[in-house]
Image (cartoon, rainbow, N blue to C red; front, side, top):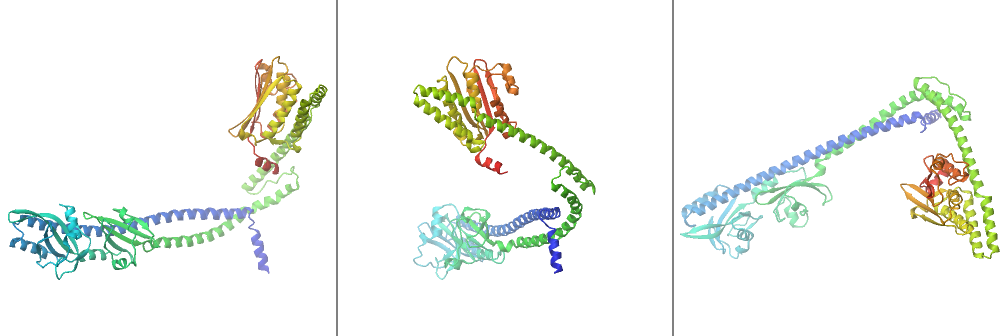
Length: 596
């Protein structure tokens, strides 16, 4: 059981919040991160280099096949040109010398099968070797004949096919054909010259190429017909499929194909001038296996690094955390709540500096606590002022007196309106004890107040309230408009001889709410306005004075910060405008603030 106790004690040292554990985990995390980052960069660079080399090597192989095939095709073209030249030079196709020359040309290469000249109507003029033609060959419908007639003057190459023109011959050939001119005596005629080439040479050029153990090369013509394929019989039997559609979109290049369920590298080269395409097929897993080997090496390397770094981190973190733990025992004395106790300063340099900073922090905490107490006192006093201003005996007396006079005059409808507005006014003032209400409720509160005042002052003024839709469900401190409207009435509108006007406008702009109260009252002098803006106007009468305005400013500054509050603009005999600026606050923000 001793080993269990030792293990438990050892594990307790690795509490997640201990500095030793943090240092250990941080060191391992940073090291592992760096190793993974470097390994990834090396792996990525090596993989890309490996892929580039693979593609380069495969392309070189395909290019070599293409070069060999082009060289072979060019040789065949040269032979065709020589045969055509000899025919053009001869006085007649039956000339013995010409027949001997063409026979010599035929004998120079083993892959040449036959040379034949036909009239444009399909009549045999002469062939070398002189072998009788088969009946019903439908010569004029064969592809080499039709291609030559459709493209006069241009040498045509056909896909591989069975040569069935002459008796006793059924060879797999590629035919070269072209419309040429020849002499028969002194007359010049047009005919179709065709030279059949044994396909074996082209087949051997393709079969000799190996792209890995499974890779291969095949050839298609410009129309997508397969000229050669090492598994051509399987393709004809429908047992193998080649996705030729994307191949036809390329003349040169490469792409990845997974139409058969595994990734293959497709490389394409075009044989000039016949337009055949050499297509190389290589399987990715054969050529990119080094990526897997490198990936395995990186995994093992990373595991070894983690083990080594873990051991070193435990040792180093233990040495670092030991003096910190001694400091921790000293700091625990502060946990009892005695912030007047100073931590002992001593130990190594880092611990000593930490102790000094901790003592400075304690002193600063004491200062902040004193400051918070003062601010809370100020806030409590402000809230008491608000509660006192919410039930204004003078306003209530005047309103009830107005109701009495209206009732005596039999103006029952106005009595009902006044009492209803008064009840709504006090209902919103109470707000179930909450000091935060929506902008819509605040505007409803001040609207009820204005209704009462218009009845009381016998429609001495008119008013309007406008609010942007986006601002209605925002939150605000309650009772910040009514004191300012009250000032506008008593110190601005009441002294006018003509009809007064009060406008209340709420706008939503740049994550701020702007609540503006405008009146066309007597206004303020520049000196008076300067005092109001500086917060020095306390006892003088006039717009902007009174405990209500100061209360609004202080409550806004306490709740939102000194950057927000009231801004006054006024001119004598022109009126006054007061703008309240507060931040946009939503319901969820207040809930989080109240929880904390």
